Amino acid sequence: MTATTRPHQVKHRRALRTATVISTLGGLLFGYDTGVINGALPYMQEDLGLTPLTEGLVTSSLLVGAAFGALFGGRLADRNGRRKMIMALAVIFLIGTLACTFAPNTEVMILARFVLGLAVGGASVTVPVYLAEVSPSNQRGRVVTRNELMIVTGQLLAFIFNAYLGVSFGESGGIWRWMLVIATLPAIGLWIGMSFMPESPRWLASMGSFGETLSVLQRFRSQSEARAEFEEVKAMAVEDYKSTVVSWKDLGVPWLRRIFVVGLGLAVIQQITGVNSIMYYGTQILAQSGFGREAALTANIANGVISVVATFVGIWLLGKVGRRRMLITGQLGTTAALLLIGFCSLVLPEGTTRGFVVLALTVTFLAFQQGSISPVTWLMLSEIFPLKIRGLGMGASVFVLWSVNFLVSFGFPQLLAAIGLGNTFFVFAVLGVGAIAFAAKYIPETKDKSLEDLEHHFKRLAAR
Image 1 (cartoon, rainbow, N blue to C red):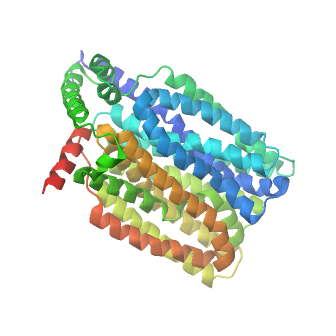
Image 2 (image 1 turned 45 degrees about the vertical axis):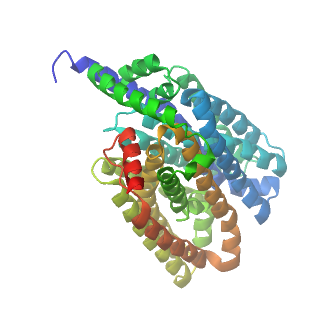
């Protein structure tokens, strides 16, 4: 690297880092809004008079909204652009957060959480796609998984604020409202920040704006790299435009159908580990295992800390280990942890000892989940679909992901009441075995391939 090229390389890296940090505020909001319910729910139960049914509805209404936000968010991002979509989502995040904060009763809270879910689902689709499309292929894994890091960071911040507010002001009425309103700050930051960011170069190419495409690539790449990538992106955009594959009926094309099934499968196996039973109900799980309410709030921070640490490790591993291998290893680890949680919950007497054992096992579970399964899932969903149906495929897959998430979060309290903590985790362990089998048979390797290379790869597979 010469003295004349070094400043340009630093400038390009800084531009990519800035775009990553700002756009992943959407991931931070995703994490905070899904994690804050963990500690806020016990206080809502008192103030809003929640029953087991309405508790499940308050928790899962966000996930219903997220499913539809993902489904339609992908199509809207294809039509209007990734940048404009993220800015619109920032406004919905702000409106939904304020509506939840000032909700006077359960009915309004459920509706407000649904609106907030639209933003969460839209962000879960649009932000990874934006990151995948602005990053170079050799950095895509680490750049896209920054969003997963921000998601778990948002959850950790929610756990920390929940614990601080709950322990310090838990006797004050409506403390859960202060837990919720904090999310307005990153929502405002996301809107302001994205107003200064460029549009995705690949989306611009799909619209035929090739001059702007090259200009954006030059913002993040050297002149030679930008020119070489521009020719590849332009050629693929023209090819995709001629193919006119833009609707559901065109999924009858074998290679597209194969990608679509892989995407749906990735979404399902990421959720049936039961990860969000821990992220949404972790405080209740620990309280039932032997901790008091305030102690459970504090202990639950360990789940957030390990999620952040594991995601850092996962990002590092993505540069060295294949996606498929990481995914299968993670599934093996989570399934083993689930079996141990179920076993210990059945054989150990209720008390502090069982509480600490269950906490240690949930931390182990999250180390595998957040260190391998979650970052690989979001990364692969952002890279396996061809440009022409990227929004459609990503949206449909994440719709399924949020739908399974809804089933887990809504059903968990009922399962807990009906068959107990131990047997509930045995159910998730059985589902984990099925996830391992699916991953081993159907998930391809995508490491070190450009988005255009992956498209050609799937076409060749279908032609065999």
